[in-house]
Image 1 (tube, one colour):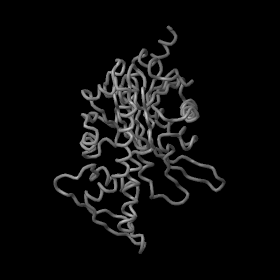
Image 2 (image 1 turned 180 degrees about the vertical axis):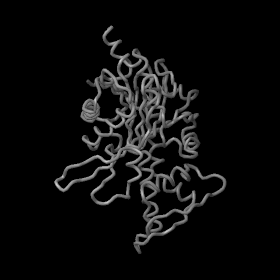
Image 3 (image 1 turned 30 degrees about the vertical axis):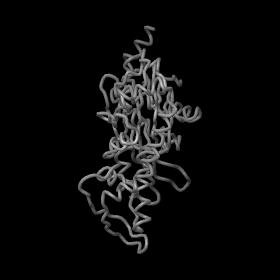
Image 4 (image 1 turned 45 degrees about the vertical axis):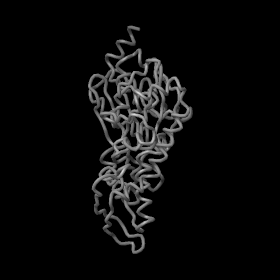
Length: 346
């Protein structure tokens, strides 16, 4: 017991929100110390060897702008590890960045994971973190971490519903007594919204827009409900017929049409979750409502559309992008809470 307390004092313990789109790192005693895209740039050699040349913000700037020998990749897909080796490099980068001060011990690390991932995928996260330099690895389901970060009373015998819309997945969960009563995870999030915009422009205008430009368009003009003045903007891409660069005018109604399919899938998942929640807990939602978190919750009027479809109060988290890593951080600071909500990996 004394040894464990001493170890916690001399190590730089971390919590990590290892997301498909972005990775955030919380350092015990300091708060959030890193927030960067989950992107790694790799230079491929003639014999198949791979060299890491950039990670995070610098690597994301290279997406779609590199020669054939350099590839900017996201090692996580739909919330889980798609490239084991590159994920290790990504974690090493963030661990090194967060623990600049020399430590006598390797850090304990808490990592949030989608509730719907398989045991094999959980082991992949644990092994990547261990290889990257973790002393111990704890996993927390993203919905529970988000609920802790928002400040929901998850330890009480009452229903708490949270909808965490990330880059690769949307997690819908009902939580009570520090556990998940019902949860559903779908592979629809910010990335699918970007892809929906790209495909819409292809179909309607034979116009190709890059991933980064689609993401920017979604953030600036994306809306779940079109109300008031219709906004228009010009975007730059390539004409698929002539193959030459082109400027295309698009409005907020068209963006709304493009986003309708992924948004409808999220709303349908919320409906199913409500239908599968025990009535003793679902009645609590009439007063508490549903809490939205994650980057996707920032889509304009999404809360109003969900309220319209469910007739329930909808609350968007104050800092939707950071609630998961803050929830992991609070568990890191509270050993008793950590025991109740996390799984020790190694």
